[in-house]
Amino acid sequence: MSVARRTLFFDIDGTLLVARGAGRGAFARSFEEVYGLQIDMSHINFAGATDLGVLNDLLAAHQLANVEAEKRLFFERLAVHLESAFKERPPTLFPGVMQFLERVAVHWNMALVTGNTRASSMLKLQYSGIDHFFDMTGGYGDDDACRNQMAALAIERAGFPERGYLLGDTPRDIEAAKVNRLIAVGVCTGAFSRDQLAQEKPDVLVDSLGDAEHLLEELCA
Image 1 (cartoon, rainbow, N blue to C red):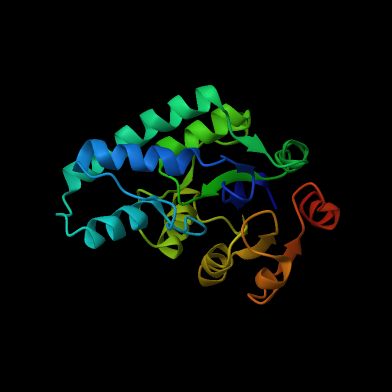
Image 2 (tube, one colour):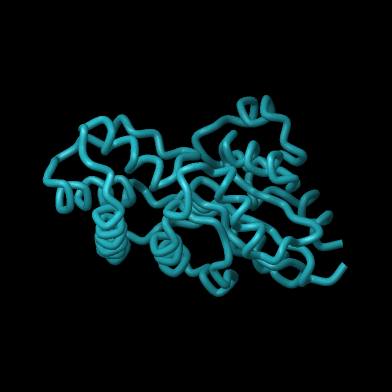
């Protein structure tokens, strides 16, 4: 099968890298700028969530109008604050991620299915030094509040590949893969334990992308 007909879809946070709270802080500052409220983000669970879904939930919780123009402005400010944070403290790749991407990039197209907005995704990849692996095809957290729908959109944008894997660190990533008939790869470097991810019955389960030789053998055959 040609490379053009197969695609690896990656989640970002918890799978490829850790942003060490930069997104949470940028979210709070952007919300205050656009909506005039200081909010406590400590209780928000971003694992497997989407930026649009989190924003919609916050607007509903604070009984604020859900206005598209304001949400677009919010996401613009989010990217600004995120980049400012990364200039001080860039995200950190998990061990072995760079080597994993280098090996599979020869054999596969690379795309994204991430709860981050497209702009935030670009920043995270750029500041962690892996943006050259991706052409930014994907489904993003400002496309849809539902990860399953984001994955469907990513598949469409990737040209409906004949074979695809979705690699992620949460049950929602595994669900999105299954719903969209992708091969589900659970990666145990995020907030969920190996046992928790195993309960979701992914097709493949790895402790990390740096410890995934059997998966690499399958992908690079």
